[in-house]
Amino acid sequence: MALTITGLQKSFNGGRTLYGGFSARLKAGEFVSLVGPSGSGKSTLLRLLAGLDRPSQGRIESGPGVRLGLVFQEPRLLPWLNTEENILLGAELLHQRVVGTTLGKTLQLVRLEPTVLALFPHQLSGGMKMRVSLARTLIMAPEILLLDEPFAALDETTRHLLQEEVSRIFEAQPRLTVLVTHSLSEALFLSDRILLLDSNGQLRGETSVDLPRPRSADMRVQIEFIEQLMNLQRSIRDV
Image (cartoon, rainbow, N blue to C red; front, side, top):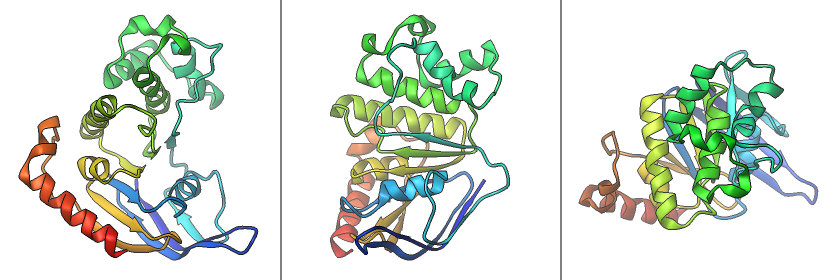
């Protein structure tokens, strides 16, 4: 499932306008990252893609009835629900029936043990909470997955580990995935393509990532990764 963005603009009270007629095609089965300075409208763009906000001008088009899944910056788990109830919450709100085998497969996909199902959010680590948040979205089988800086609040070790898990999940179940991140290394590790936004959210360039899949932890220290990261850093400075 693809997304087509045509002539996008978003205006705000006070006169600021983002995106300046942004147009792009996000292809089915690719992993795309949005990078740019703070305030460039990356998270707002993700909300527009998710249909949680409306553009002032332009169009965002996908197939009819497309299923979108959004993972937020914070896990947003309800503290009075246990892990199983939090995972099933989104599906229940959309009146989707989830059978036990689907729950079990989703737990395996995000590498959560069944023993965590009875635990409440205060009993989970930060990394486990993000796995639960990801499971809550994946169990609804979205055709397009939107990730809004889901690892920003985590320590570096946990962040790297979850990057590797998201890469593994993407490779196991390819779908259009769009990530907002401030980390160039994260964007490079996960993506097939990186879109560079300037301070007004206008598209100033894109980088195709020429790294093989599957991607593993040791890739970060390989010369090919370091060279592409340096090139990406130069591209950002020129934006």
